[in-house]
Image 1 (cartoon, rainbow, N blue to C red):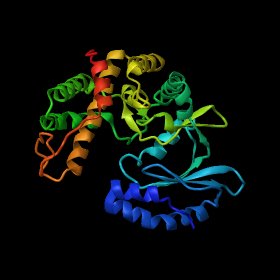
Image 2: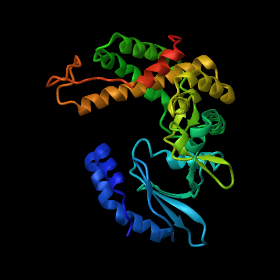
Image 3: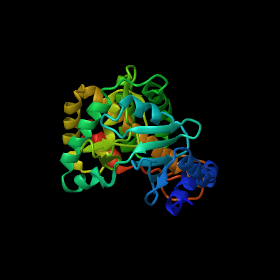
Length: 317
């Protein structure tokens, strides 16, 4: 029997509702199926994030591996194609894949050595590692059928005007409108590189064949400038934002203004999610809220660190 951590169950129910419940109920049987099909033996306690359960296993020849069980959605559907395209260069290797369930068998990395431990002691060194990995990953063209940044940018620009009107403060409105304007400048050329989309310090593990390898992509086809934000935002330090941005654009060989536009687009995306989350959590009709906490009103609070990134890249600070 596979023990499913309570925190993973709670995350699935919180974020995926009925679909998450169905996934959890099917999980013991699915794990047993793939342990048998791929001749695997569990070799340690289960690990998890929000979206996936990962079982340390040994293959029939004794080789360590990791069995990743996750729902199939728009973020996870492209993962196997991306891992095949990268072929283990700068990222974890894909060993097996079941298309129907999205189950993956991956190369085992050192789950006890995250890049976040380096970031705690030397954040600049950790950002350098991220930049070097991104330079390798985004050098690869996206495979056919990968979801595209162009469509995502169009959706953000279409949603922004109505969302911005819901915000009570002039500062937040102005910043998001400027982020949208910057995104509009670059959205016509969305790019065709294979993006990781979520390369922060906890998504980099030590590997035996390379010092550091990326895991858990949420792949897109697009401009590498859209991939910078996680490393800017992770372990946020106000005084380091410009340094991190400059380092990554230099290492990746990016046009600085285009990268700025895509990074501000990422700020816009994150803030639109904040607005959506506020409405999901509210008890009213989502109308404009004035912040007094009255019944039927929504309090919109945007992440200050996201706003600070926008202000710094827009030259407001």
